[in-house]
Image (cartoon, rainbow, N blue to C red; front, side):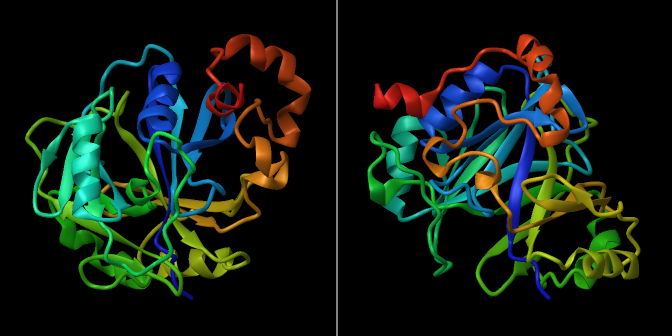
Amino acid sequence: MKLEGVHHVTCITGDATANVEFYAGELGLRMVKKTVNQDDPTVYHLFYADERGSAGADITFFEYPGASKGRAGDGMVHTVAFRVGSEESLEFWRTRVGGKLDARSLLFEDPEGLTLQLVVDDSGEPPLTADAPDVPEEHRIRGFAGVRAYAAAPERSDALLRALGFEEGWVARGGRRSGFYIYDAPPEARGLQAGGTVHHVAWASEPDEHEAWRERVIEGGGQPTPVIDRFYFKSIYFREPSGVLFEIATIGPGFTADEPFETLGETLSLPPNYEQYREQVEKILTPLPNPRAARRA
């Protein structure tokens, strides 16, 4: 039983419209699900991924309209890293989004200050790419490489990460995919979770393993939630000792559980228990651009 790298990374935005324009527009990802936070249905939950909405390529955002700009601090993920195909791809993206080239990687920020990194992919794993007409196929983003977090005393997390099967370094490596989890020394300023910060990082598991993963978390000293059915996948949540909120999420059933593949993300999807509130929810949420529909037009 092994974790299959990063499943998804969930972040916070204060401006869903600008968020769509950047992630589906500038970065060329596919918006594969437009839904609500299942713990607060007045809040958007937007999902961007590869063409198929695969685990391993899925960056997501809760929208709190007008949220102030946050900052990453001790116990928070501060950088989300994606893979690209080559050093030429790094130069393509530097020209498109700016940033700083450094040792086979590019560092840049999204419009709200979230630090993103593109790294040259030497994993040998299948690329997870989205169809984007203005991004050449060879330069398209290929899924997650991993995340970096701030921790003042990262050794506190050793026992739990080992219990979860992370390799030294730390790397979650399954039979299909892998993802790194790297600690850096934190800044002096205290973190502030708001716009442009990471809410949690999810690691991918095979279906029907969650009770076994709960036992692993407990063995490592963690305190996991019960298994929660998120409709598109099942999850458990817990904080690792350095402070970062972890989720373990199943690969599947996936985003086609309630809408066809061809039009993923183009209309508001609501979990069955919220469908009765659709009229009220649609009045609250900000109207958003529809990138794929606009392209077809």
